[in-house]
Image (cartoon, rainbow, N blue to C red):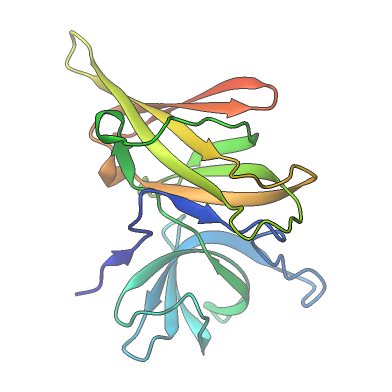
Length: 218
């Protein structure tokens, strides 16, 4: 039985040397870009994708990458591809981390909310994922320990008289001594089956002030 493989650590360590995803520009004249689940076979090859629109496509050729490290599982990914005879011809594919929701009461570190550049949040058409698009300020440093980290922290669960519940979340961000010279795009997905509420409210500290993103889950 295949299962979705996501980052199991509370903290997502972000590499900031370049944009996380190769856009594939120039390699083909027509490209599609989708968030998807990448289905991996017993040989650690991606052979099929299921997009956030619910489209299931086999690949024209098996895809391998260093981040595809486990067999018979499913990864969260962002990919650029050509659609050929109802198959996907992959141009580039990058792993998208899935966030674990950590309870604030169990959090044993200072709650850091260093600013990010906020772009957008949105629900996948299938309703399986809540996605975040952010830009992190980065730069080159001689400090080998410098690394940014992100996490999703659960603050409170608000229960209303009508029985509806809203889960309040906070985006944790530690700049981690990384210089703030330029920006790199980062995507983050939250599986909605990890949200124990009818709707969600996410507080994000941006360079322009606090952003509150609200979404209905079910």
